[in-house]
Length: 350
Ligand code: SAH
Ligand code: SF4
Image 1 (cartoon, rainbow, N blue to C red):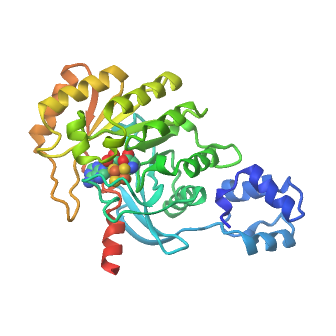
Image 2 (image 1 turned 135 degrees about the vertical axis):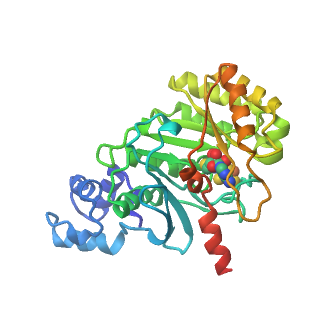
């Protein structure tokens, strides 16, 4: 069983079943989340019999690193194998002040929530081979632990912008967030976590109604139903009006701004008409717009617009009073294309 999917209470229940005192849960959590023990044998203040019982039943390290790209001072992308052989990607971004308004020395990890993705956005590598399965809460938490361990660096922010649609794996996502946030867990502030969704409106409402102040980013990529529907099939199920209502529910409940992510794709969503419609959405919700030049995916024909077109698109937004930034740093290209490394490896293996 997956130790990292257990809350402290859940762990207490497991201890009950094993005939052990519940207070051991605190000791176990401290070993795992504070001292980062990778094996039960290391837990020297626990009775040997208890350690043996746990070692026989629970795994602490569900991920094995099988690949890596990037470099120390730019973005590093890790490819992990799960216990059933499936592959996921996790990305370490050294600093993303432009993205999340955080300090320049703050590191961010971009975490996957599913193997593959069922939503089939036309421009995205993660959905190209369809959906395989949801990640467990433990597999989500383990990505954070593994990247801190492999890099030897403390990570300050989490963005759920890796492979998969986090809100299609809602329960495991929220359990993972609870463990990442808990004082007995990783103690990461809710405001240091951002969930990105392609627009599952009912889940956005659920997310707004749960108590934690986790941030929200919406993958918009089209500012009218016509354009958005062409590249994001999810828009047919939850059109823009429904999506914007759910977003507005979030901002009202949380008293927090949200972010619209908008990848600029040449000849698809980079027109002035789209910029104007996007401005209206952003202003109505007081949302921050993140413009991201499209990152080419092998096998797909989409391209980013020329730089002057990107700048012009930004200008339309800014001049009309929307809060917007254009991502210009090349180092982030690798992160923007989550799903590609896995695709390369799985396709080579096929
Ligand atoms: N499924 C969620 C979480 C994935 S986030 C979502 O769609 O929001 C990954 C982000 O990268 C999304 O905004 C996605 O639209 C964007 N993206 C996907 N492919 C990309 C590419 N080739 N270039 C730039 N951004 C891309
Ligand atoms: Fe899935 Fe998000 Fe990619 Fe769309 S953009 S296919 S929802 S991972």
